[in-house]
Length: 390
Image 1 (tube, rainbow, N blue to C red):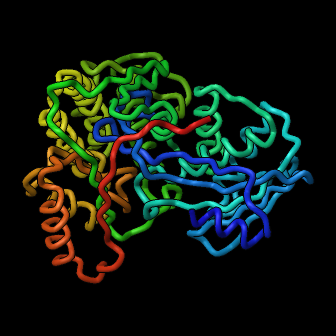
Image 2: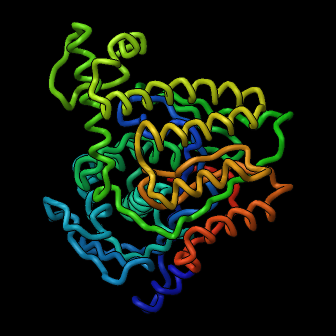
């Protein structure tokens, strides 16, 4: 493993351990967890590895194979505000963990990602892999839910991205050959196994060639527009409401949205339309998976992608074109943007019988429209996987 080799080069010794957190896909349920929606997701067999050892002086010293600059801070004096570089996620993780657990040892490590950055929740995977390593050297044992909430705290309240629990939950709770069906209102979840009658399937990741940062995208603005729509719906319907940041789509019934949606400004109405219809798609998708009907589940994923483009209004031109190509390609059950959808990846559930043909035809069509991305665009075929070992 490259991170292990690089660690040995830097520190002239072998690492004490290697932590791993998988990436995730969310075929149905995107852009809803921040307002306590439901999601379906799968961890995949690619992710973040960190080769690490304890540092007894309390210093955290981290390097990444993806970024040139090494980062350093002390467990007792994490910068109070983010520094604007790749290591903010790790500083946030240190800050969030130290609020509830005494930390005595620091850590040195090298991070390696097994797929290109963007769209597979790499930020959450980095945080979780780092937390796992930092907990191990300090003898801490966090439950699954505490690990999820600590990682969420780091990204939401330190890095400043208005995420929900989707990424962290998929990467911790998932089980190979099972669909995670999670209600972010109360964290209840079900792991729905692959039914005996389900057609064969694999996961294809189409990397657009574009990297992104959620904090620098329109992601937060989209969440604020949804909250604004919900806040207005509460006022129109005479429902009690408090602070703006407490407005939540889950507390406003679908019938209220249907009654007053025409009174909302168009952008707010679109964000609400996505949230409410995505909620219904998730419920229908979970039932389709339970029946072993991957074709219906895939079609719902395609519909989720359409809503992300037209109602949530996300998607770089390259991703939108990838999505369109996927819909036209034989052997793809369904798919959509993976992640926020401002750049990064598209994911698809595919029939393995058409794997090579899918890879060839999608690549040919995409690079015909975006020839300058040849060498950056890539295709990766994956399997479902277990969540992170804590």
